[in-house]
Length: 424
Image 1 (cartoon, rainbow, N blue to C red):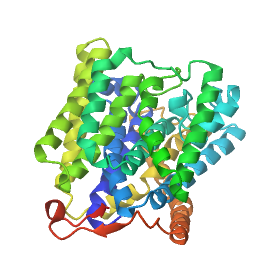
Image 2: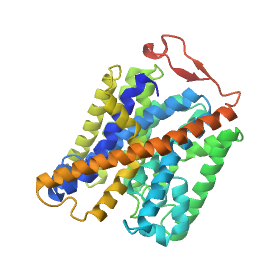
Image 3: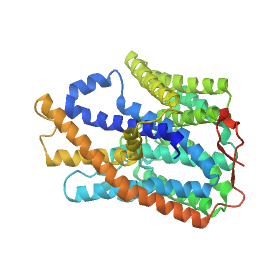
């Protein structure tokens, strides 16, 4: 990532740290104070929504920079899977040592769980991930597939319409959407997990081999239906409903709208309309579909407002020099996000009194945990992520891009005065 995109690294690192502190806070400030804050703003969702906005901005940029679905998917797979598999290996080792408990679904529906984890789709199958935070990866993978399909069919410049359409679908259809159409029973979950493994595997293979790409693209676009009908297949799904799953995709496409507007591919009015509709849909859907309570309205107004202000501030500061610690935090953010809960579980097992005692003791323990979590994330980044990405680049270089999917540098002045790579 170039220096002019350091602000995205910093924003990603900040979002990861917010999620870490959210999970740590009950042990430092106590459950009652944690819940008191939660009633005003959900910092967990705040951090996740920031992540999704950044993904929505970065993924189409990455795809169009590569100009090749082959290069994009090789880069993505070697970017996300090494650390993901490492986190699973750590969980397996910790579980075998008795340091943390297995998720019940891993024991009761082993085949389904393995298939769901192989595709990063546990939440959309109705399973709790080996690490709870894996639920967001289901929506990241879904977004990759949809964006790839739109790219194949030359519909990727219509993000300004996708974002509000998904938001309004969640708001208007809401409770009428089925939550577990494909995963309500044991057999349905296994079939769904198996089909997802086949479809995703064949789609990625089609992109890498440049064969049947149009068919894979159609399947990718169709993935928008998965969270619409199976967003909360079981109580183990973290997303509370299918309408909330659609909202998460809408937020990702909102990030894409910002990218399109910045580079002159979407007009200012269209972008403002799109982003406003998404924001109001997120607030309105949670307000109306959660019983129309004032508490839900206030909470989600605060969540969306905080996300909008944070992202807008980071965007406004994008041409400023970003402090090196924030850039470093952004680079280790993926490993930090995946592993911080595991580190917390293991630490609590090793030190049962962790997070108890007087406030100064709890604060000291919390700072110690943060240092340990950052150290583990840095080691994973250095020893797992960097080698994985390097291997992906070697493989992509050997295969080369398909001849009909190339990129060219835009002329100076394109895209609000910035040079960008465009797909042709």
